[in-house]
Figure (cartoon, rainbow, N blue to C red):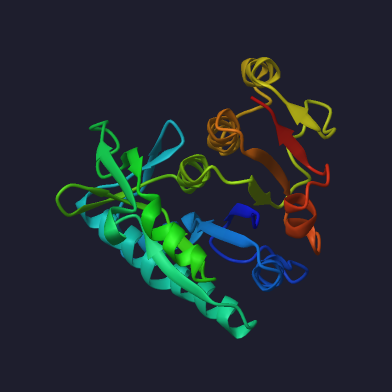
Length: 254
């Protein structure tokens, strides 16, 4: 059975040395089944500032009002998603851009008045993804969920990646960042992370900020048997190395 790998990347490629998109195309040509989930927070912040729409964070999540959700959807689905699909195509790959609203791919619900149009995932419809993968296409997913009947919601991209990997029972989930992996208080790589170590690092303050949703998403996927890792996407060829099972970066174990 071809390997299915869910890859979370930032809103843009990670730098001039980054080979992630060409790695994705090489995996596709080799008969593997990559799925991409992307972010775009920096561009959203930039556009909110330009449009003078207030932006604040609550417990690490962007509070999203009625004006901001239009910007979020426009940037993620309209700009970042389209750009990534275009770049994959330019490298010779076949990709289709999606968000959670498409065919009810990612359903969600609002859950905190302080956060506004921010969603908590209630389900992932894998039928569409599987049909695309069976057709040899790379799904590229913007982290926007659907609250029935038609309201788009902003969702943390790390969380979407974890839930998609879990629902697909993917072989692996790879978070590509701009650091080696999860680092301890001395700046040394943590090669393997279990729940007990994660709790200790979080209590000590080493594990915080944007790393928390990544780790939580990895544990969610790992519970379903997915090999979940975080690694430095700025290193050429890193995605293929991790997806092939090489022990680099931080591996999360349930």
